[in-house]
Image (tube, rainbow, N blue to C red; front, side, top):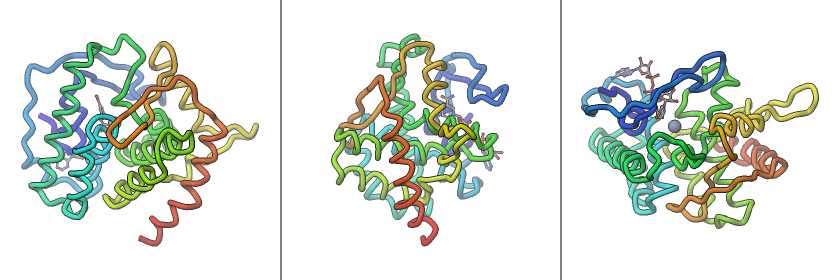
Length: 250
Ligand SMILES: NC(=O)c1ccc[n+]([C@@H]2O[C@H](COP(=O)([O-])OP(=O)(O)OC[C@H]3O[C@@H](n4cnc5c(N)ncnc54)[C@H](O)[C@@H]3O)[C@@H](O)[C@H]2O)c1
Ligand SMILES: [Zn+2]
């Protein structure tokens, strides 16, 4: 019985059970389809704002890779969602859960033997950010930064239009998420950007070829197997310079 927006919308309705260990995200885990999941929206009433908000980022994520009309719906409902109107929240959580279940049931790889992870759009950097913060940054907040980064990168790779990039970043921010965290720019003594190590860790976690989802359109994800590190650094700098200011003045 999941009791948070994030678990009702995503984590609790899936088959994966992960435990963070040895400083790593989801280092230990199992795959086990639940017999049943009961999503009772009354649980959401007592959540603090940050936890109410957290599940919404997974809704934006799955809408971005799978369902353009769901993205439109979230956009239209943004004002109600930003004040956590219970009915609107429930509808979005429900559709988000439905899309996650649909993927698990119909993708042909529920136990993830392959390297494809469309539902992990934006997550390679999110998981690294959580680790770098020693898990003080919540999953929802980290995914907001991760989605912003991979959306901006999709734009810079000329896969996604500039208009769509602006639309996605605006929605993430309208729902009250920050799209940048200073940890994203942390550089070690040798000049390496620590966040980028998340790509190697993500590949190792997949146990095969690096496979990252990017966006071709709002509502359509595409998979790539290579990432241009210098372009990612430019995107991080742009998030820091252009977009974090909006948050502090909001
Ligand atoms: N297994 C998967 O497929 C999957 C998918 C997405 C995310 N995740 C993981 O799930 C974790 C996030 O879980 P979460 O967002 O459910 O957070 P959580 O379980 O950490 O709970 C967040 C906070 O809310 C409190 N809380 C929970 N229910 C409450 C309620 N009804 N009223 C008041 N307070 C309540 C908790 O005590 C806690 O302080 C992350 O680690 C994320 O990586 C897993
Ligand atoms: Zn997630």
